[in-house]
Image 1 (spheres, rainbow, N blue to C red):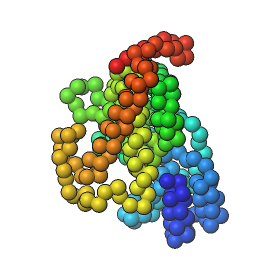
Image 2: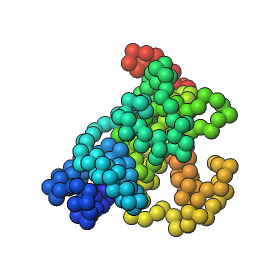
Image 3: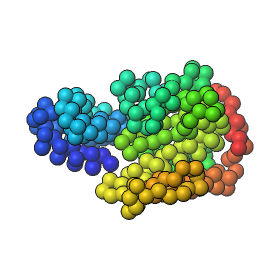
Length: 267
């Protein structure tokens, strides 16, 4: 994904860098940095926003986004934090590109956030003990886990987790969407699976069906494009694989300690 981003930016800056206010030296330095080190998901988002701004002839917006791209931030490990702990620009981008209705994505209160962070930490511990290959793959795919709170109204439209091709390397988790450590372990396997499939789409789509073709899916009431059905099938299989591995090595219904607190792993 970084290689393709670097190649594309190299082309864009070569063709319209002058109009964007980007010098050849700045372009070369930025592209080299992206090739060399892991980058934050918002860098991918800024690129897509810039291209859309160019296509809409919003040159001033495109120039501002180009400046954002000129300061890539190397990152390592996974940063797990609440939506409002991001910069204002980054938080707005996550809301806009991850969820159809940005108003669904709210800042969790301190108690809910602390509970979710502890549960996520314990979920990684569970995967490390019971399915280390999955734990390693999640860490390789993701560099940001954004915690938000969906609506409290049980009748309101909400989400459990979300990911976006335009924010590769990030997932959004609803602090109210998972109740147990096992729920969160499945959510990590699920949403990282979408990112893996996104990584396979750098040159072409996973399916040949047109987006306008809609199909019934056992996981959703509404008809979906085949790409959505494919994604859903894959991530459900990935969740099943995770549960099967955890059951096989007898790490469920266990009690452990994380950060000095007792954590109960329950089904």
